[in-house]
Image (tube, rainbow, N blue to C red; front, side, top):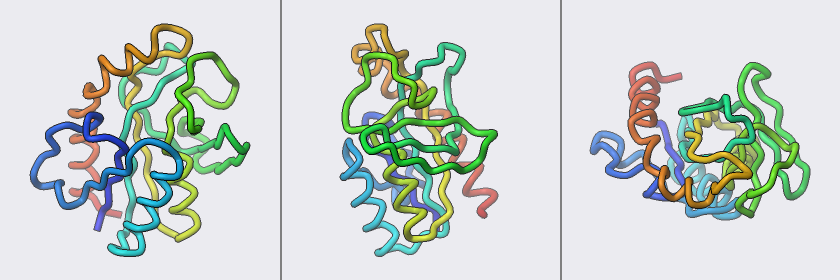
Length: 165
C-alpha cells in the first residue's frame, strides 16, 4: 500500500477517485504531521509513505515540483540526510517570511513525516510544489498558489502506483 500524507485539502483539491483511499490529511504543523504519519503506519502498515504539499523557497531558480531528500527541523536543529542529489527542506512550526540558512525550501510538515518514517522503518518520498518566495509577499502568494501543484501531484502518484517500490 502507498499512503499519501498532505497537510491541507486546499493543497491537493479534487483528489482523483483512484487515490482517495490512499490520501490522509494531517493538518498543518509538525505535531499534526508526526501523529498522522504514526497513526497511518500503525493502522495500515504501508510499504511507502509519500508526502505531497506546498512550500516556500529561498531560491528563485527553484520552481514547480521539487523532490526533497534531506530534512532539517529549523526549530530544534534536527537533521535527516538522505539523498545528496535531492533538495534540502527546512520544517518548522511557523510560516517563514525572512531568509534563513536552513535550506532552499521551507514548509511545516516534511521533517516530521521523514522522522516518523525513519523511526518506524517505512520507505519515504517527499514532493513539494513551490508556491512562494521568502522575503516577498509570500503569505499572499502561498494563498493564491496553494492549489497549483495538483496536476504535478497526480503525475507523481501515477508514477508511484504504476511502478511501486
